[in-house]
Length: 336
Image 1 (spheres, rainbow, N blue to C red):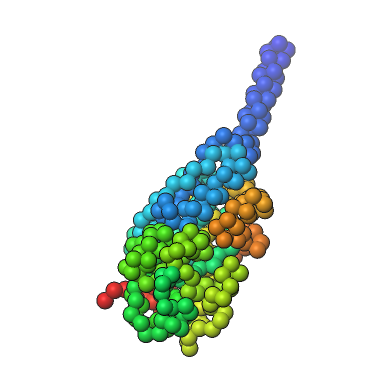
Image 2 (cartoon, rainbow, N blue to C red):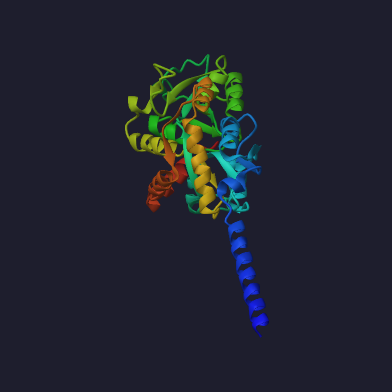
């Protein structure tokens, strides 16, 4: 009997030890999980789009601070909708992320209930933001327009991947005869189209202007830009009744180029990715890489908490505000 009891006790102890060992084995840290894995960063635009370029600049730093291999996968379509749908449905293991996303379109595509949108923007896992953003309107290097008021009542074509910032600038400055031409998936493509006369203006960033100095120049920035002294900004004054639209541009610009992941990824992995982003933001080499293309790091790292709070505040538009903005962005400047 004693032998049986001793054997039973030994068996129980061994079983408990195995169970404890299994739990320890399961308690894998986020750093251990990512080591040697492959992270796929989805870009919602083409190979030469600014968003894809920024993601490629970030990839080696995220690899450095996570221990994972990082590849950037462009997935253009629907002004980024295809990529956002993919992100929403991706496996929530933290291995599919978006290093550089179009924050304004994430929100408004959902708020406007646009066709083809199959995601709930409020459920994405927002990770942080490292890049200072300053949306610009670009025109041909040979354009007679050097400031927003020069356009007046001129009829002109404005290129974007899908309508967004162009209509907002038009409302801010009273460009009543602008026509949006969608389908230009990369800012470089817009720059070439502008130089050929197919377009007269388009949305871009400083990087596009730096990359195409002989083709385009900035007409106006959302915020004053030290890299382009003398260029107009919204702070310099907008048309009568345009302030509300200027405020929208500035607000949406603040969530441009954010990083995010699918809904429901483990909290420790989300925090680990956020930490990697913050380390990248602080890395002098990353800052130097941004400076090469006249892009600046954000004045401070925008944490997931700050980003989520700010996005929530932007989303609290009244039904009338949403209806008005949807009409302006999606319909008012479409080709008649």
